[in-house]
Length: 432
Ligand code: ATP
Ligand code: CA
Ligand code: CA
Image (cartoon, rainbow, N blue to C red):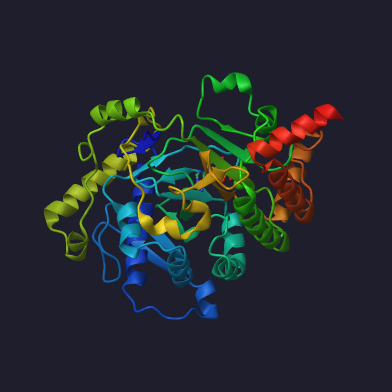
């Protein structure tokens, strides 16, 4: 299984930020996990805790490679959310703090967000706009209640909300969430569907250059594709989507989409590529040194402090753009069991197509509703901005959240049908 991304190592422009994110997560998550579990209170939803890290360490925080400030939001709520989503607490820490850092997906969207994958590809860190951050805090209780009632939700699973700031740097807010795509299966096609046609076309000519590109609604329709789900799965899928969309309508959220990664079982994984990757990438070879937990707790020696100071100077020097190296990493062949509990992620981490008689189909879908932190007011503001700027029609078709949700539901429901049903409909259309 080959994963393309840019490895974030010491030469990467975002190395310090990424490193600090992981250090902060490790510290705050272990801190909360160390305590005895308890019921949530109203105050837990508003909680925030600030920590200062520096190279010498202090009574509250261990020494770190760099000076930075870290804020942890609603740690108890997220601990419980991780519980509902059945994450193993130790696993979570290992994934996000192993010494193989992260790979970066640059900024795939227009929003300017950055995406980082944990080294094992299970988790995504997404940097979010301050408005999205404020909004998530505001709706956290609604989200929590929804997830509690709907553990099979298709919405993004949020595992943590944090903020990091390096000296003289800006505040960077970020969430940790589930990677919908599996570490062990190739995704042959990716679609991001909103149910709108305006600007929802990826130039087919560019697909050759970029075969892994995320395609959109018009590309989907042009290919006459369907989410091939037989009656049983279709009903469960649409029922859950309906509930999730209802929540978003209530919270005035819009601009979300259904992300669908398709694994074609006939094509399978590109085994040849896997062999090649093994040779190129030697795990453990060039990974950065990361302090071990027991090392963190003791006072550093003079020598270490001097080394850290040297590294810090070095890191400041390397804060200029560097050529981005493409990297691939070897991924496990098997998926661990935790996802098996969740209906839409229980077929090899995804949702396998079925036929009219519920017989398994030829594809596995890895899907979910993503980008669900945009409040209607933000869209309106952006639209205003664009209108003022170009004095032309808006580039974003902003319709109110109620209609956005209805249109989304209608589109996804409309394309959810088995091969058999699609063929029958086509035959009938010819007759009439
Ligand atoms: P914009 O607002 O311009 O749409 P954004 O920065 O908010 O962009 P998203 O829409 O959240 O970004 O995601 C952009 C792309 O990143 C998706 O199309 C998908 O390829 C990938 N992506 C986002 N979330 C996930 C996820 N949970 N699992 C796998 N891939 C994801
Ligand atoms: Ca989006
Ligand atoms: Ca967005």
